[in-house]
Length: 276
Image 1 (tube, helix red, strand yellow):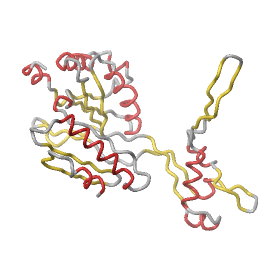
Image 2: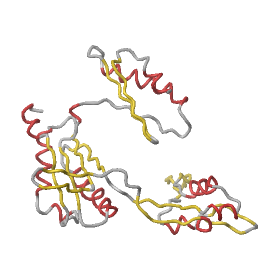
Image 3: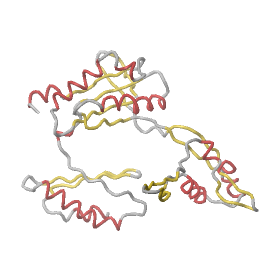
Image 4: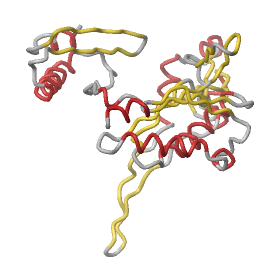
């Protein structure tokens, strides 16, 4: 593995753990106590930068972060509601999460378990063969037509305006109208060789709560992890975030009055004990 081979030469490494999944890999390096963490992080960045050329094509640039115990979530919430998972994802992401992010001191709010919108193109192999097209032809057409790119600039007197080409496809019907190519002078569109569906992403994660006082389990589609900014008081941030969730006007303002928002963990007691 290119990255593991490059990283293993960094001095002061005590242990390297690698987890590989489909389309994703995680490498965790543990250093001895004597090693300066800032210098170690810089060495890792340099080694990774030198090994990028040996990674497979279309691989996204690696993200390098330092693990800090103080960056652990200060609060974890479970959310559920009577609507569909896709609709619940839309509300949770664009209303609940953004509302919590407005609290002073909250650095980020991570959402786990959502099922966002996904447009699916279901190809028909027989129709593709009949029109003499391949899967790569369809993919190239979708990539070519569904893009926003700079469109140059326009000079009007003393002003200069930047132009942008709006080419994003927003609906399943528009995806179906994309032209793959021509056969016999007739344009062949995506809808001629495939079925386009406005659907939801494949469900890969979910949350469930097991409680001693309630038999069985309670399903909660989403889990929010609230993280604080490292430079601000964690105790005050946790209190303000908790207070916002408990305010009766919070849910109507977020169009979430029939939902269940259940806090399952908070570091407030430990934060106050350590005076962070």
